[in-house]
Structures are given as structure tokens and as C-alpha cells.
Amino acid sequence: MYEARQTMATTSADNETPQRAAGGPPTAGDGGGGGDWSWFASKAGEEGTAPPSRPGPAAARTAAGPRPGPAPTRPGPVPEFTANPGYGRFDPSRDAALIRRTLEEVGPISQAVTSYFYALLFTRNPGVRELFPAAMDAQRDRLFRALLTAAGLIDEPRVLADFLSHLGRGHRKYGTRPEHYPAVGECLIDALARYAVRTWGEEAEAAWVRAYTAISQIMIDAAAEDERKAPALWHAEVVSHEMRTSDIAVITVRPDQPYPFLAGQYASVETPWWPKVWRHYSLACAPRSDGLLVFHVKAVPAGWVSGALVHRARPGDVLRLGSPAGSMTVDHSSGNGLLCLGGSTGIAPIKALVEDVAGHGRARPVEVFYGARSDHDLYDLDTLREMERRHAWLSVRPVVEGPSDGIVGRLPDAVRRSGPWHAFDGYLSGPPGMIRSGVDALVVAGIPSERIRHDSLDGLLALRG
Image (tube, rainbow, N blue to C red):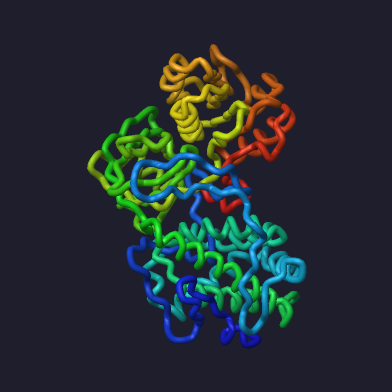
């Protein structure tokens, strides 16, 4: 290494005091769950969502309670990245090519790189091992996927800052503290230096140190700001557990304090049966006066969390929730209609959006296309039909791939055939493949890409199970 260990510092958002890697192992933070220590990888989960690829519209309403909700905001100014004392300030135009060359070289051997990274982290900082899930197989995959995601955003500093701010806030539930970041960064640099034998050198190392300094500082600042207005996590008691099919459950929980969220957002969930393993699930309701939250969960093969929630959870069990996130929210300042595509349990946030429109009292057309493999899998159709009967502005169209009395075919194809949709904003929720094809279908049907909202797993740290 080229003195990176002496100069990789991060600055506390509270007091601007440098936190250096030297000086002993990091300690666990208060109130934490486990850590997703794969640099800055998030935990995306079964039938869940992940941080958005671009900011959504400003949101309008939060749940009852004294705390303001974490409303998505419109893009702010391009961030000025924090400078590293020994290497200067990160410059995307200067450093992006060096970083991408490193990633291209280590891509084919990413398993070896990440295994070595964790070996370094646990050997140098043995106290942090207890913050991780017991099983590390899936964890190893997240690091390199996180690196690829950041590299893909490295030329878009505003989007990168939004992405990392979300992750910094979310990492509070793991117990992540500012003093952890230099240790992780040091091990990352050493792992890359060992395996990127062709592309590594003083310039490459300097680029990575500058990039990591900027990345970690954004996350630290976002966490510190969030700490002033929200807890790191919520405890939520299961009050209702309803099996809709053999592998889908509708679960209602009561958080121990107000949970400020917006219709269309999602929450990370941890069960008592799999400590330190978190998955994202969309909230299936708009904020309610009784404060209850609803999730639709499908058990997927080898899905630890989804399997436990569907087949093991019962009323009285207590889950833990991370902060709400996501930008797939309604812009109530717009007069456009809403064209909503929900596949499988992706119908959960779509249902929340419908409730949100109804709660604001201003009639605007809402077209819901509800996709499934068979009529049997349309587990929430009766509820949506009842909402359709109550609201003249709502239309619900089930679409199934197999034999059916309704629309037969693929969901994006059905939407495309029913267009054009120039006067609508698009909302999509479902499996990654459906999101990809759905976005294409909506663009063809007349909706500009900037008016299409989704919190897609695809391309942003997707990891099922």
C-alpha cells in the first residue's frame, strides 16, 4: 500500500473529528442488529425492493406521530465530495476510468477477492464478526455487486449521493458507527491491491482511496442526520397473520412507536429466527390512523426470512423494522392519472398507492394491471375489486399467463395493447424481469421515462432469498 492506511480518514458529521483506521478494532454501535459489512451493500430481499435508480417526486403525507417522515426529495445540487487528507478530493472524471479498470480485472475472480476481504476484516477486527449473520455464503456476493453498482453511478455524483445517503441511513439498524468505515476501507484497498495485479498502482490506489473517503463520508453524514430525528429500528408485534395461498401471507404488525412512511415505500425486516438477516418488503397500505402496518410476503425457495414470515410467524411474535425507504410515491401536485403494474406480491405497494389517492380526496384516474401466473395466484383480487366498487376513478384489470376468464398474456403486453397512456404516470412493482419489460412497454405506450417510478431490484444490489 502507498500510505493509504495513514490517510484514509472519515469525518464525523457531528464534530468533524477525523476517525482513522489506526487505534484498535471498531466497536459495535448501540441499538444495532447485525452489520451488512460488504462495504456499502444493502439487503434486498424476497419479493422486495431496493434503493431507487433515480429520485422520485416529493411526497405529501406521513403517519401520525411527532416525527416527520423520511420523504423522498427532488435532486439537490451536485455534492462536493469530502477530500482525503493525503490523496485529495474524489473527481469522477479523473478517477472513474481507474476504478472501472480495477473492477474489470477482479470481476472474474470476485469470489476470491471478497473472501480475502472478509478474512482481512475479521482477522484485524475480530470483534466485528459477531455483527454478521452466522452464514456468510450469501454475504460474500453482496460486496462485489455493491462495487459494481457504485461504479455504474460514479459518473452521476448526484444520483450516487442519493444512493449512498439511503444506505447510510439504513445501516443504522446494523449498528454501523463512523469508526467502522476506515477499517472496512483499509481491508477493501488491501484486497484489491492483492488481486488487481495488472491495473493496480499508485494512481489506482489513490483513486480508490479518494472514492472510498467520499462514499463513506456521505453515508456517515446521512446516518448522523437521520439519528437526530428517527430511531435506528422499530420493534413490531405481529397482530394478524393470514395465509392467502400456500406460500403467500398477509401480515399485519403494530410498531412500538410511530412509523413515518409514505404509501409506496418499503421497510427492511428482521425476524427473531434469523438474527442479523434483513430483507426488504413493500408496505401494503397507506399510513393508517391506528398505526398498523401491512406486508404481503411470498415464501421463495431457500428464502430464510420469507419462509419464516410465511410459515412460522404468528400473532404475538415481534419483528424488527428498519427505516422506511423508496421513491415510488404519488406526486399529489400532478393532475396525471396513475398507471400501475403489480406482479405477484408486487401488488402490495400498488394497493397502498390506491389508498393514498383515495385518502387525498381528489379524483384522478387510476388503472391497475394485476399480473399473476394463474387465477389462483391473484390472492388480493377480491380486495381490489371491493376498492374498485367504492371508487369510480379506479379500474382493476387482472392479467394471467395461463387459462383465465380475464386477460390472458404477459403483463407488459397487456398494458401495451391497452394504450396509449400519454396522460398517466407509470408505477411498477414486481420481479426484476417484469420491471425491465414493463418500463419498456410504458415508454412505447407513451409515458416518458422520467414519469415512470419503480424501486427495482434489477441493477441495484438484487439478492433473492
